[in-house]
Length: 162
Length: 334
Image (cartoon, rainbow over all chains, first blue to last red; front, side, top):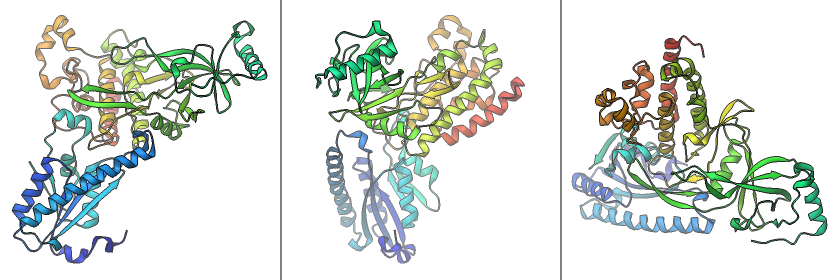
């Protein structure tokens, strides 16, 4: 993948490039509202709204058609959520050219790692995520994306919005 | 189910093969030749299932050992004789079971995935610590897994027979048990490194192969939508097994309450297993000679844990330290 795929990276390095990683949850919405409230007055800020849909292997579905149907539905729902989130940022005063939306469907063993890979590629200086507030037992069984990012992020700041 | 009317020659061929491997007196007078296994309830004892043109002489159902369903027949898992070779095989037929379960107070939906198991069988072919087999599509496109039969007891049944008491077990046998466990974790790492999970890591899914003298993981067909990490659920399974191995069985809170009240009184909630609250994870409180390095691993799976293992590399590193301390403690060069 070439750098051109990410726009003018050199320019963005001089700005404050936030990676706002979201899903459809209320916690993500809170994180978006926090960023909108906190950074909207700053013309140097650039926000990448990122959502990652973990691509399930074919064994989750009886047929490939069902798998594609599931992916299409997930993508449609996430496109809708991303449009809403972008609307929140715009209404807070951020300009169209300060926002990029990225929806990635990919296989990943850890969503947190996939977010951090994007952070590294895009050279974002801050990663912002909402905290789902899962129980410790849920974290034990399935892991926690915000904890994963908090413990493994390098060369960037991490904001976890409760 | 498609019951293929067997041509006399076919029947005769199959009867000849049955006579060769089972004895002439065991050749059934009537049996069906089946090529579509969709309705597995209709496959009866002594029927012959043709898969990829190989005839399998069907025998009994295997038994379910999960959730207190001991001895419940699993009609989709059948023992069979592969007639051309006479080898015993396990045939796993397609059964799209989906069920909800609660682990550590967390509800989750699990389901059986023949495709996942088939994919993993390809992946672990030749790996000594996994069951082996192949998969074929039957006449209706069902993914049937044909597994090699492993002769031997369950690993957990083996280790509970070691030693006259825990002290004896821990000092004489546990160093070797620990080495076996490390090998099992390394084999799960092999799966994780390929982006795959076992999905149902339980102590009754490890068979001690008497022929090869190694432990082998079985049953990879469970699947579930994971959350953040693909590996966390496997990690908790490994933790439960380690707690069992270190304790020479589960150390149960009710047993301590009734039989060793003084020990019971030393326990706090944080000492218990996060997955099963009636089991003690902080086993050093029960058996003080357990090295700290080993007990610290167990504490990662306790209710008081502040941090959990995310991957096999992390626990393998700690197991290496525990192994060294076991050598120092027991004087046994492993």
